[in-house]
Length: 433
Image 1: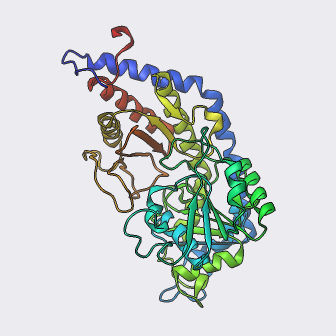
Image 2: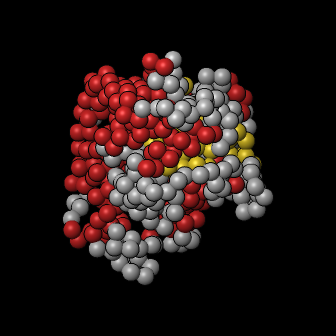
Image 3: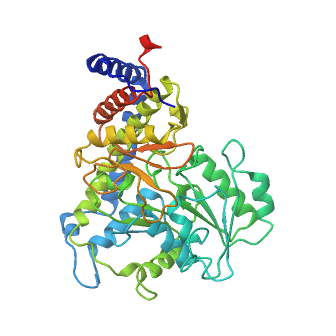
């Protein structure tokens, strides 16, 4: 709860306090920032090796028209993405409108009526609710097509409940769905080590069961990707980590060749699958975005560490609570009040390069169960590679911050957010407590 805003607040004093706090946290985190920066080189080297091995040249920047038959650029992009993701096959497509679309194509492409789908990371991200058939009318959902869906809650620590999983695998499952990121839940995101153990356990119990990973927000955060540790299929968005902040739209699926083809049958049609679809003369942008991605992911991680440190210093609950436990680019902050969410989102929006004059207000958004408030003054609409924040308007009113092209931008946004929280009565200056 906030105190009544004071008309006597000295704005210069408040700004000086906020700036001192943010810079103090940044200084404390300097060794961690250096570690994040050093991690760019091996990640970039992996990307460069993929470009080299597939002999990427300027001729691949040219796109075809019409059906996209024999599009050499599209084909080399798929091969490069497959190498970077450690997969047999990949399909990076601008025709995917979002990560949710790529995930849905994989689910509908692989699953058949009567198949058993099991989620082992609790309820999936909000936008998948209507895909699965657990929310909304159910029309057109997996349940509507006869797929049987079940989900296992996480244990009290927000981790995989292996006892429940053992029991659940007593039934033959066609696919196990694993969400790598926390999404809008208050839990740790899954590490690559955790995914490896989980996939090994599932395959040991049911060798033919498909381990499918929602890989959104996790790409290039660790030194391996899920396909390298046992995942059969993964999917994600190109306006998140792998787009490097410049890819205008799209998503990807990657993994076993047969499963990627089945997913693309859903995107295009059986018989066409992975072999159709043009790139609208954006092949260069997809490749350049991937080249930039290691640096952009590192900056996002540095920014997330800073958000964690600042809000933790002020006594707020944060998830993750330790920066060295970070497995994706999301930092959650429990603000505990819907008005506080609006105050922070507005400050972040004011600090954005695009649409700084807009006032974020809660509103309904397609695919989400609750009204959503977003601060997203990004060059690519909805891009979470760029600095943004959003929150569903539901208790306990958690804010989810992600992205950032350079940590100086996030410092500016945090300083402004702290000033506005003081003005709105949600924070007191130390000397007034």
